[in-house]
Length: 320
Ligand SMILES: Cc1ncc(C[n+]2csc(CCOP(=O)(O)OP(=O)(O)O)c2C)c(N)n1
Image 1: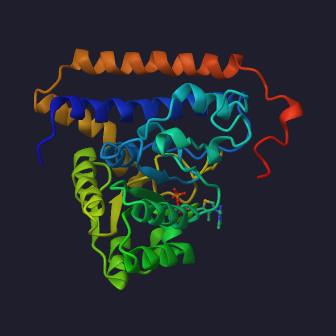
Image 2: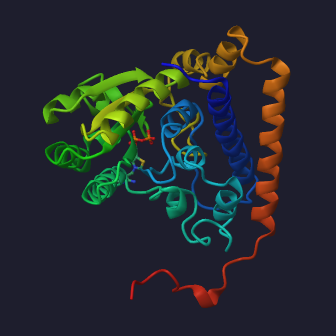
């Protein structure tokens, strides 16, 4: 598949932005500036970047508790995200959602979600609406390997296949559901085989290879846009940190951790870009520096934004 230099560098920039956002969020959380919980996306950046590079603002995504990467890749602004993490009025949810509930209808982000597996039926509903309206847009559901054991996964894929809906199911198989390894929560090795039960294509790719993700997601999105129905795309990856920040990670085999860190998706992609002579080290450094500035601006925006007014505590809570 042909992919130009601009797009290749854009994939890199998005991955770097996700990584730096997460590192900054971790630092602020550990210093006590941010409350709540943080489920970081480090190590999985190639998946959000590779998938969302095939989408427009009019396409939808549903996300998970580990959702910052999806939001950034889909076009979310880091300043409004950071403000949401700070619980401020300028955040995407006016400070009421926090890390696990960031949503932005303008960019098609139907929401991160603290309920495991809850995004899949929502994406199917959005895909149904798109088909009903005769649009050629698509909906994407991101979810983890453990979420593929939930009834919502099976019900959503069944309904999507029966109705031939424009939806792509992206399983980010990072090998764990909290502290439970995949081998202890399901007997299959590849989640993608579950697609066979529903008569749709199921594909497994290297989720740490952004170009492999991009190309396979492009095929799945194109099938959906052409009215050829849903696909289940499984991306094998690794959660570089614990389930949440504060998790002692005693259940991880240090050898596995080491092996996967050597396959860091950003590092691997840098090597590829340099080997292909598509970019110089100076250009990569310049991209990182630009991203760093935008993250610093986002922090100061979040920190200096006003708290939500207590008078608005019920605003947007009840539908009239
Ligand atoms: C319905 C539901 N059950 C249980 C939980 C508790 N819980 C939070 S995250 C998680 C594991 C999710 O694992 P996976 O789907 O593989 O995603 P990952 O955390 O690896 O990204 C669980 C069981 C929850 N939030 N919602």
